[in-house]
Image (tube, rainbow, N blue to C red; front, side, top):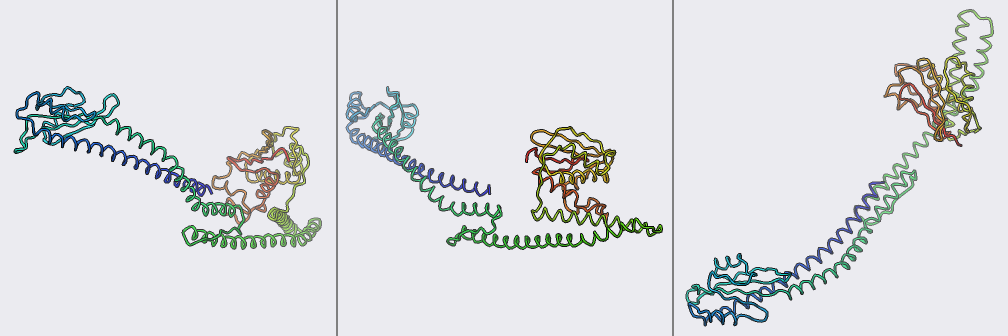
Length: 454
């Protein structure tokens, strides 16, 4: 259930990020608003005070004003650390903190103009305005400028920043904790669903989830329980049907063996007696069919043992090359098959089951492939491989995935096969029983892989 684990991780991350970002955002907004209020308040206070003092003190200045009057006005406007410059219109003050942009703005408009500048790391509020006559609001020809240090305001701002930073970490921790608690409440049902789904996938079909509340997760848990119950019923029915089918095959195969044995004895007698040509042909045909039916019954009984889990290994330390040679010799295939069987390759295996595998593979190659048929034995990396190949075209690509299926026919036009249709299926079951595998292709080759240890 990789997607559930991924969802769980994403939910945790989402809750934590939302909580953390909310805390950081709140702290940042608090700092920004405090900073703006602080600077705006200081700035408005200073500019208002300067404007009022200019209006009050400039009434005693004559027009045109003398240099002494300008100096006296500047002296009267200076308060504390404030620096004031009183000049005639268009004159340039000596202070470099009064920029050309500010002077140009002051000359174009009658109201007080201001800007913030920084020199040597110290912030300043710089303002300027032309002095207007009360009568008609005409210009008096005088311009005043102020330069006020904002060092204290900057220090207050730094204190606010430090306070915001100090408050941010606890806020973030609290937000993350709250996010984790909220995520836990959401994720507990998801984790339960994850575990239940994995147990269901492992075959524990009785797994159910507790249903709490009436939200979407509760409805999902109820749907899961209903699906699990339906799956348990379906699998139970399939298992029962499969068990009945296995019992039927095993019982029928067992019951057929006795009459087949009797029929085989009768045909043996008939073959040894004096019969005319037509009767002899019929006897041979019956004998062949009975032999084929006997092979089918034996294979059905063998496959039923695998299905029932009753197949067991009788392991012996076997020289694999000698065992393959004996299989070929017993069936008279020695002259028809070329071999590459290095001596001394010994592994623990069941000799009878190895004989069944080799006989099926070589017999299949001789009947359906193109000579010569070759058997090759190799050992490496903890495994023994046996390849059985012929020189035919090999199996078509669409046949390869089905070649080990029971009763599968590559040529559907054939109503009947020469063998039981179970040979390759039994061969692969025997390979799997040894802890190995049997594969087909590519090309006209079957490869048996067996571990070199029990």
